[in-house]
Length: 95
Figure 1 (cartoon, rainbow, N blue to C red):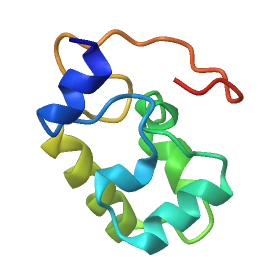
Figure 2: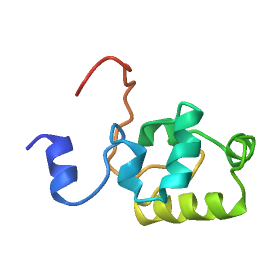
Figure 3: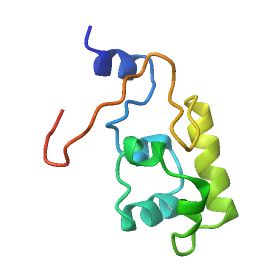
């Protein structure tokens, strides 16, 4: 079975999933999207400091984001669930 299909069947995120699948509040998604962060992959190597530079992204937004990532076994700064392989995702390429 293809990894993406298996991940979705198990209810887990795939790095090419949109950030909305993290089930974070709409206002947090909107702030991230304004900064060009659209996919889970786009978040994985961000730091707290880089996110705090986003206008109106404060402690509450950060806590909601970190909680959502933690539920998937991820943290900011590059840690992803065991068994995931990060691949470069081309913006115009649909997987």
